Amino acid sequence: MLITIILYPTYFSPIIHYIALAKADKVLFEVDDNYQKQTYRTRCYIYSPNGKQLLNIPIKNANSTQKTKEALIDYSFGWQKQHLKSFAAAYRSSPYYEFFEDEFNTIFEDKPKFLLDYTLQCQEMVLEFLGLELNATKTVEYHKIYDSELDLRYLANAKLKQDFKFTEYTQGFSDKHGFISNLSILDLLFMEGTNALTYLESQQIEF
Image (cartoon, rainbow, N blue to C red):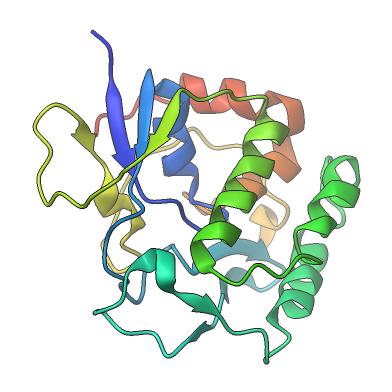
């Protein structure tokens, strides 16, 4: 049976997003919804020396009446420099950080006007790092309910408790804080490198 999923593009998405992408035959990316706060569209979590750390993209005049594709990134806070420093502090000593570093750093030099464009750029880079090719399209209008697609848009809700059980992999500070599940896909990439896609495909998750 062919599986078509629908997902939101998000900022260096949680690992569960990429497990879904790795298992799907077709992907439909939702780009016609209204903007919502407290979602993974603007945030990701990494494993810092102090444990789980939130990184957030600021948005100009965000409100729920505007389309997500109209949401404007606010660059006045210098958040790109801050995020890059946080990633370096968290993963500089990881096995594959230097392997990806040069190309990874370029994503923080570009300044797209719209949030959607930026998250799609981040996603494209991660897919390249993973070696994962998608059969993907974007929505052309919003539908609250999909009948034939597996609707995984709820995975973008950062407030929703998502208790997925993953196979543990080595993390940089697990000796201090233990294994932290479902961090940004970058945690897996920087720790597992070329084995990351195999890891994603091996996870037995029922959505």
